[in-house]
Length: 208
Length: 293
Image 1 (cartoon, each protein chain N blue to C red):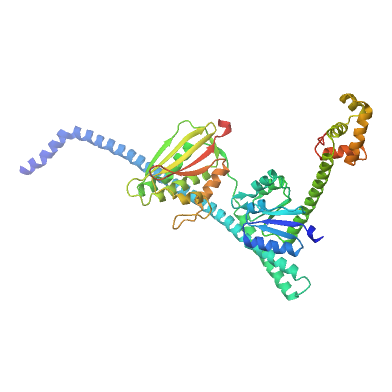
Image 2 (image 1 turned 90 degrees about the vertical axis):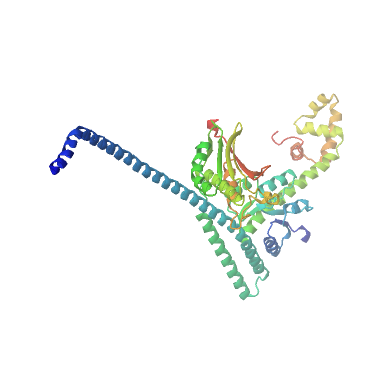
């Protein structure tokens, strides 16, 4: 259980701020990893744990908003809490619009920090759960034969077995066999459930 | 007889020249009148000059004030940032310690809460200072950059003469209007020129500043301020626009960083390059007012 402790990343170029925040968060039972450079955080091997990033918006070499972009491009989805020693309102608006959890002007109280961290960890957990589900579905899809995968696509698009048989120029019975095996491998009890899987795995768009 | 003669003679002379005298008196009167007019004009001229001089001094004062307030605001903002770092650390240390002591050492707990209170008091002071000096938004208006430079030149001519610097101006004709805050842009130009003055302090012979405007492309104007000063050391180039960086013994290191932030707020760019022969050229771009394009 202890190994599932959420991990909080802190990136601030001030050594004392890093150390103090680490101590405070550790005293609340979080695992903490602090970096004085943004690059250090990027090369760190991220653990598959609920996590959040406390990020100073002005770092040497890169500003926090640009860093937020870099993370997005690299597919790092860890929720961000920005902290700043400047009173920059326009920056905070941009950061929030780009999906930050919160924007805390320094110095901030323990309570404000913990509220933000709690919200970030909840979001991270939801994200992780979602990602776990998606990879589970993708693993199941990998077990499908090419024919079964095709039937999966067509069923997910709302086609009936009869229509699929006509389209493929095969008898209904063959399609029904493929379909049955596909539903079993996908562990889908109903077509509705199958469509949900297809959406999650990006086989069909959710607007469909 | 003699007396008679003596008195008679001037009378007769008077008699002879009487007509001439009246004429001359008329001329003198006329001349006096003209002189009076000229005198009046002169007096008006002097008064006008004095008024203009006062206006220039006033404008200069106003600009200096803006610069000073601007510098102070920037200074306070930087200071607030610097101080907020240790305040954040102190607050977090104290709160972590409080948490670790949970339920024990009530005396120490109390001390920790005093530390936290005072940390927040300091934070409050900084916040008030910051809101006090909050920069007012620039007043953006369509501007003729050449006219603006002409106005600014007036403010530095005396300084240039005293410092034995030749001021050269090359303004491209018929430039479209730009959009900007008059005072702020003047502040930038004055700052760049005053840096150039300082850079030429120890140049014995050739001291010249060239201010040039030109159209860079369809939607940008560039203003260059070229001097024949000492140039910029290569290692200083990347640090030049950073707060508090200065190569002058009594400099604050604020001028260029403020100038750059002003130009950036106008949607332009301020940069510098050393000249191939002598000195450096600071240049900034500024977008053309879309309505004028």
